[in-house]
Structure formats: structure tokens, C-alpha cells
Length: 250
Image (tube, rainbow, N blue to C red):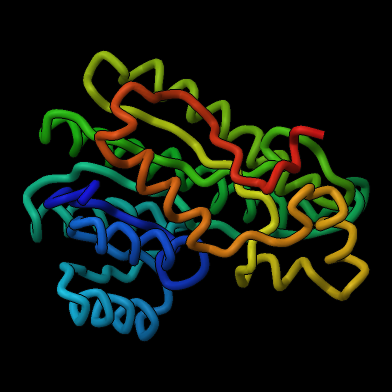
């Protein structure tokens, strides 16, 4: 088991990539702390993990609220007395459209959730990991953190910044045994992409750039995340792993 007895936080855990990662982490032996806004879904997922013989705790968390982030890490330490890893996955698709018409309040909301919250999560996680003797953090960026796309200006801005934040944190804490990496998913069959995929034409536009000619399944993102959280990636830090069906090699 790659994560035997490790304590792992997963934000945005109630659906999609977060849910798939939490399930795989638990199956690999982790004690998983599930963070999300939807209490019913979170408790159901925790119960499912426990039903499979794993250990899980749900903590209702809105990552746009700093006090919730602080409470999440505190609750983790209270329950399990340590923190070994975290997958900062919570995010929103945000407004789509021309930058010239982008409402500033919607832009700021997206940046709060997709970027600022990750900084706050890492601050509390790193403090806890220092006490645990090290750890691993994985941030969920996107292929749009490396390339641009029309109408995705706000989202792409946040994800580009998140890649930079990941590299900076990796440099700051490598000597303390804390690794920080990012994953760059391409199109994935998740709730976020269902907001984007407004018809066959949109689907075709995205998949036409993917050599594998399909969206990823959430578990195809979750498994590489588990690898980056595990000791099997003990010499990997500051990297951004594209999981995109070949999108960025063209």
C-alpha cells in the first residue's frame, strides 16, 4: 500500500477528481480527511470508505473562508495527531468569455477559490507537516496553467499562478522534507467540465486537441496524485505533471 497509515487531506473531495483521489488514497492505506461544502455527499463518501475497511473523516469546509481552512487542519490534527499529505483540489470554473467583458467581482471570486485558498491551505498544512517531520502537497492546476485557451482567461490566469506558487513552495521547503508538486489535468469527466461542455461542438473542440480523443476519467487523475503523495515519489518536487492524454505535446 503506497499510503499506509499516512494522514491525507483532500479538498474538493465530494465529487470528481477529489472523490476519486480520496477513494484511491484510502484503498492505498491512508487515513483520509475529506473537505468540501456538501455535507451529505461528504458524509456519504466517508461512510463508503469506512465500509471498504478504510479510515475517513469529513470536515465541512468552504475554502473561500480562511477560518474554515484553519479549522480543517486543526480538526485533522485533533483526530489523527499528524498530517503527512494534502491534495489541494477545490476549485470553480469561473466566468467564461472575453476578458474585455469579465466582471471584476467574478474574477476576484475565482482567484479567491482557485489561488488564494491554496496559499492559505499550504500555509496551515506546512506548519502541521513541519511538526510531523515532513510531508507531500499536491496542487490541482490544469493544462490551462501552461497554455492559454479562448474564453478561459480568468481560469487560466489562476492556474498559471498556481504553477508558480507550487514551484516557489517546493524551493522554500525542500530542505525540510516537504515536497510540493502540481498536476495538470486536461479535460476530465467532472462536474466542472459539465459546466464548460455546453454541447457536442464544445466537446469536439477540446477532444480534437487530445491525441487520445477522449476526456479523462477522474480516477485517471487520482492515481497519479496518490503516487505524488507517496514515498515512491520521494525525489520529486516542484514538478507539474501533465495528465492530459497528450494534449500538450502537439
